[in-house]
Image (tube, rainbow, N blue to C red; front, side, top):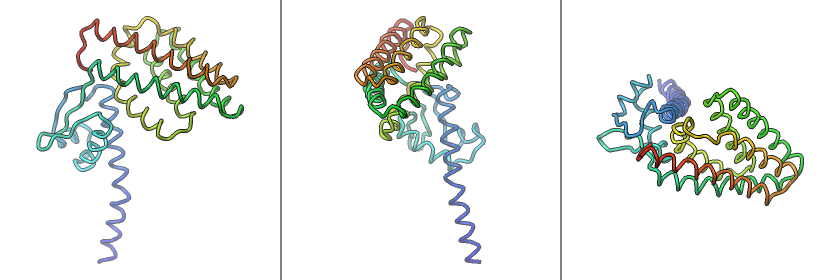
Length: 235
């Protein structure tokens, strides 16, 4: 009996991380696509029912999401989906500009075969953006753009930078998708991406850093006034 009980406990411990990971992924996606809209507040049980999960993994996933800045766990009041203000977006872009500029610089300083591999990956995503822009497929454009920027930071092979950028990308995703249909300069992003890629291919570390920084600064200076012009206070 004791052996069987221990085996059951072992199986439970093996399953539990997977259930929590599933709940974490499901809740994060619901936040990113606004199924759980900013300001939405519900009990853990209600969220679990909406996701078709049990309460315990939702509780543990909520703690992780709180560390990511996506929710607040309110004692005896449930879970609150955090909203972003324009000032939050300004701070987020300050971090993005710094990290992506440094990432591009690091990649361009790597040995030729390594930087060319990253550049090839970035080029695939940029070509996908170009095709999506031609077809006016904004969702596909946004997905390819996000993949480009993720690949840029991952290409620097700095684990801390990757973790930081993933957190703030999740936080800023709603704002980017909200403004996607309002922005008129999306075609410029393709050319800016190609300048970053060109600098990486030839090993121009300073040029890669400056191109990446300039690209994100222009995006910031486009997005923030859009939010202001529409009177958006929270996202």
